[in-house]
Length: 195
Image 1 (cartoon, one colour):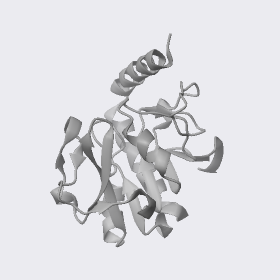
Image 2 (cartoon, one colour; image 1 turned 45 degrees about the vertical axis):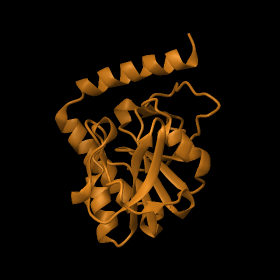
Image 3 (cartoon, helix red, strand yellow; image 1 turned 180 degrees about the vertical axis):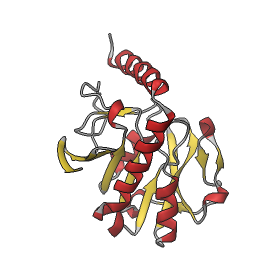
Image 4 (spheres, rainbow, N blue to C red; image 1 turned 30 degrees about the vertical axis):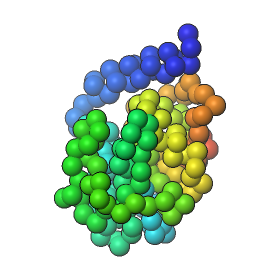
């Protein structure tokens, strides 16, 4: 089995598991993850934050997005501009977001662009990951291309029940230093701030 086939099989396994999770668990874990993120000193110190807009059964990032805006941070969200290609766009309010590629909320195309090196702190999604920050995305390569150019603080948001310690990786897959679940924060695979 090739790495790509392993990744596809793991995506199917995690999607099935995710479908079986109770709405209560999804809501409570998402709320806890968002609260933990907002308490991170790295987030609090950041002037410019890049974050995804939680969609479907992903962690609801709306509390994070709202906090960043109310705290006066420069908030950037991804705008899909082609296959595997996204641009970082600044947003001044969530009301302007609308379903874009794959139905994911995106900023308008006329939103100001931001450069990767302007970002102080990045909050990324994943289908699953391990505690050491090896992530499995949806397969489009959008965030892999971002991580290839970004050197700032980065955290993955993942529910603890979706963590898997055997993530098939390829040379273009970049690990993320922090993983945040409802149980706490892991840094390079080690519990950093739990409880």
